[in-house]
Length: 193
Image 1 (tube, rainbow, N blue to C red):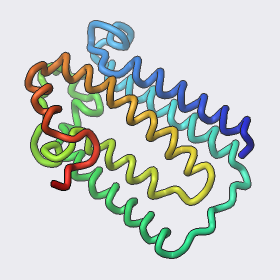
Image 2 (cartoon, rainbow, N blue to C red):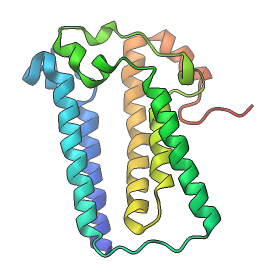
Image 3 (cartoon, helix red, strand yellow):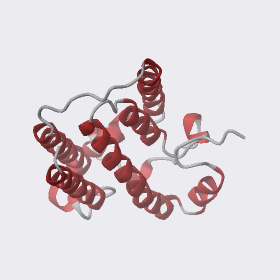
């Protein structure tokens, strides 16, 4: 990939991040909710899916002919171990969420977003964003060529910055309960001691 390719790819990630962050957390009465009513969460997820497909497709197009990095066996094994850990962590993290509200089916049926309790059990006892941690493990575990490295960098930056916006929404929604939880629970990686 040329420098211009990297700049274009970074710009695509920035556009995704901006749109995704600005439309996140919209309830039925504002933002995407005004356009889609109770279907706002489904629309948000559909928009995010289309955007990420476009960004990743652009990356693949820009990186045509990309050659894999030469890596020793121990590093390849470590990477695949990270991918396996990311998959397992992601599956366990998803168990803490109700699928209906997460995807948007519950809102479509009329269930209010505010009806969701703060998740502090299971993996959330050890880290505030286990799905983001799973994504980071998957992203960095897949780095075996230039495009994968660029993707890991930009997606990681998005997750780090996006988590700040998400935490502001969670603090506004759950108040002191989230403030206490945030004070004792690490963001992405559990404390070892």
